[in-house]
Length: 339
Ligand code: P6P
Image 1 (tube, protein in one colour):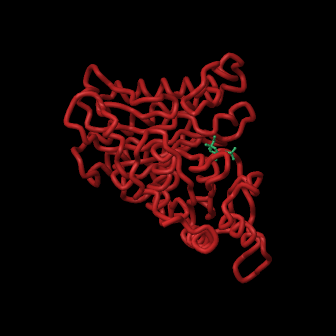
Image 2 (tube, protein in one colour; image 1 turned 90 degrees about the vertical axis):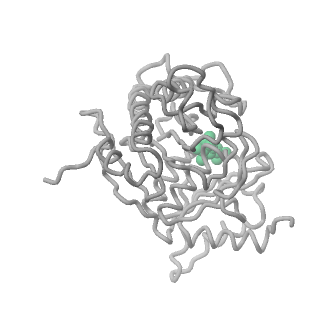
């Protein structure tokens, strides 16, 4: 039987492709893999452990009630990344400002990480797949703890990005700019193994993922696209199938494998969209582009957007190339951007 590569073996094998010093990325990604295994254990026990379910009482910077697992996951990724010494600071959905690493090896770390430690956490107590999303940049500051400007880099500057999906199985999917690879956790060993080498998203798909409950608040171009998806036309495989689980990592992962489009546009309650640029849209966009898909805000490439704040939101149209282009054509025609 062919030897199935572990995450560790794969990272070491591929570190030649990484344009910075060998070993740095290995240590960084293995720290993420370790934290993912620890968080996975707690996520899987959540149903049994009353004391870790339910609101932590606090609110995160988004004003959303923080679930205890959010807080646990945030603490675990901060600890794992700080201890490994390659990272000088973090931007996390759970923290208002930059988390500066001021001591030990970390202060000389050459990387910064933007992270959503547990996205979709409103699904925790209904046992729906949730996920961690991360984006890795080379620092722009010279030394010392990370600075705000270290995070104000376009998505094109990412050196790596990925997500962990805690679902029927737990997977780590990431890119360093040389394609996308997926690793499945073998809980009996506690290690990730290469299960989805060189992932590519189909150019076309039959799945559209959007919260149609917001239909009346969508831009006209999105309304027209939804109606386009629902028209009977065998030649273009329509009507499409609507699949929306309320957990972006789960929707994006399914669409990456099967083909499809995920749209979170502007709405009256989310005038800039809901997803955050730094630690959701940018890492997703890097991954999907590397897999042959597209990621835009309805008009322009997500990776080209210049960030101006840590938690800024963006509309997101992401997935199969032909589907995103079609949706963009409706936006151009019916909801053109002010010049
Ligand atoms: P709505 C989870 O809070 C999240 O950020 C994404 O994971 C998910 O796709 C979206 O929000 C769900 O938002 O407004 O449709 O409930």
